[in-house]
View 1 (tube, protein in one colour):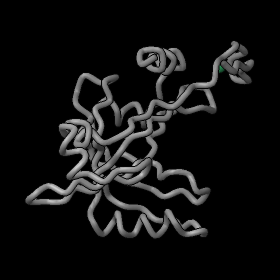
View 2 (tube, protein in one colour):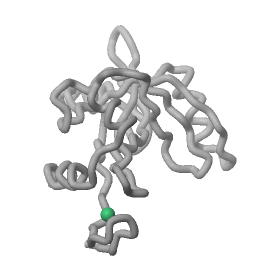
View 3 (cartoon, protein in one colour):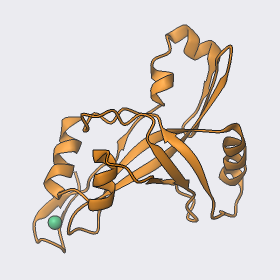
View 4 (cartoon, rainbow, N blue to C red):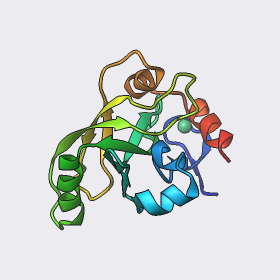
Length: 166
Ligand SMILES: [Zn+2]
């Protein structure tokens, strides 16, 4: 693993990997046959064709700032969006020139670092001009995830979260 001497605190750190979900929760809970017949998923887009409705998801990044460090703990997560949004985002995604755009989405992964469910949290989805996946900006809320996004977490806490999944 890559380690480096931190410019901020002088300690030796390991680069924090991002914590990623391969699919939205709503895909994970489908049985294998339904995944095959109802869902269409790749690394960035997921569509689930239920009988009565179609659900659209895109993959994005949630960055939690780390206190006193120029570093973030990154969660690779999925948000549900409208058909209009996914159509528009597909155009941006495939275009060579990035566009400054933002959408509305709802978080669709259970981040188990929080005792209160994270599914359904309201998010602004902000496209990045550098071609990376869009960043989430949570709507104001008392939810601890949103508080962490606003206030930051300690580096020790970030390391604890990374280690808890490996
Ligand atoms: Zn440090």
